[in-house]
Length: 621
Image 1 (cartoon, one colour):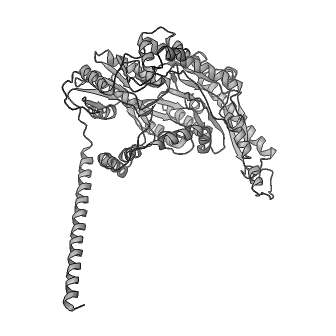
Image 2 (image 1 turned 45 degrees about the horizontal axis):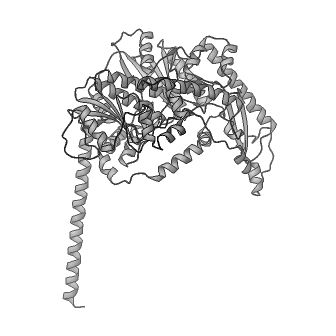
Image 3 (image 1 turned 120 degrees about the vertical axis):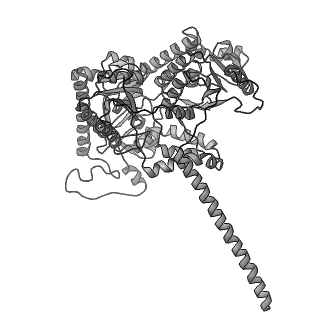
């Protein structure tokens, strides 16, 4: 190649390189500008626009909970990735409904329940109470859905009008409690579970010791399931002005009713008075526009009536309500399984919950504490750590009131028992005062694989709890004594705090589950009511006059860098979400596996330092 040719090629290459370098700088500048805009937007906070004439759209996704799992940053990042949240905050919905009653911009409420998977009956009852109060303001409540499950229909029944798709159905199947049992499977895999319990009704170990439900568990479960079903029927038939036995007849005669309607489930629902009309989605939107006086919108699409979602509306109204008061009632939520150490929201950590209680104790403006408990229990050690901290708060001469959610049983009752007052819903599942321990060993499985463990120790308990070898009698006796002691300690503390004899509490204990109304008659709780009732009572016990105190929700706090990341994630969420694909069939498979393996998953997570647990598998379907 000639010199001129080489120079020409060099100049072309250099020009391309300079062009690419300039492009790189421009892209870097654009990226920096984009990040700067996000930071500036985050400093001013996210602005929420409330239309001048709109419906408050309540479209709960997943389960209705007292506390969302994960911290605010984790949830914001999940939304930014386009991950569907499987929980809805009961507090958000209630706060939004209360503000909407007197907000002239909100012309009505729309319940879109297709994404709602359920919640404890006590939570549904709290939300129903707010829907009834909203209707009393003269504004309409409209429920829409492709179909309605049991819990979806409970909320829908509170509406002025219920519209369902012509291809839909109303499936009200009552309450049940089904668990997978693994004994035969564990035997086939040569896994030995060593189990200790106190209380013939303490059934949380049964999935690994039996292939079916024990007579005692059936007796206890049947009693509270009937109580829940009775309360459900009474609430729904009253709301829909149906005969008291209407839902029982609907469930008992479902096949006959369907045959009479020629297989049309929608017609059955209308004929039975469960649904007002069968409408296509477009027709539903037309009815909604008419109900809130928003006519002539022109465009026809999925969101063609003016609306604002619960989360956005709750955020908007809370910004205008932030006022500091000299006296406050602190509210701390304890929701999820009780575990040792520090745990994120959605679980209860012995150390992390104790730290929140200490924050309340150190705050001079806090005159009383309300602990909202929604837990089936867990670690006995962590439960006692929390109990100690509650008692320390009370020694500051300030009252503690417990508000029980849908479940406050076993360890959930342990952390409640010291309260000056315990409030429960009539349908709260509580009690289950009992303890147990489970330790698996795999020596038979290892033997089948040709792996053999042998050796010597200096004492009978050297390596006594070793999952690779069978437990000796000395180790088994040691744990059995711990379990007996923990049960006596549990019952003794309940008797002391409830001012009853050991024998009285023991008669209501033995691991048995009670609904709130029965727990009241047995002296395990003091009063029936919701969280608001508990807060009002705590204020009264503290000598605070109505309207003269604030409500301070004490939650885990994010650091400065985490708060900035939260703002960035929130601001960037729409752009990031567009880059993510929506979850599909994987969600269904994941949910099925989670349900099938739930008891073993709980056992895997447990981390009590002594291996002793106060837990209740008393969730219902």
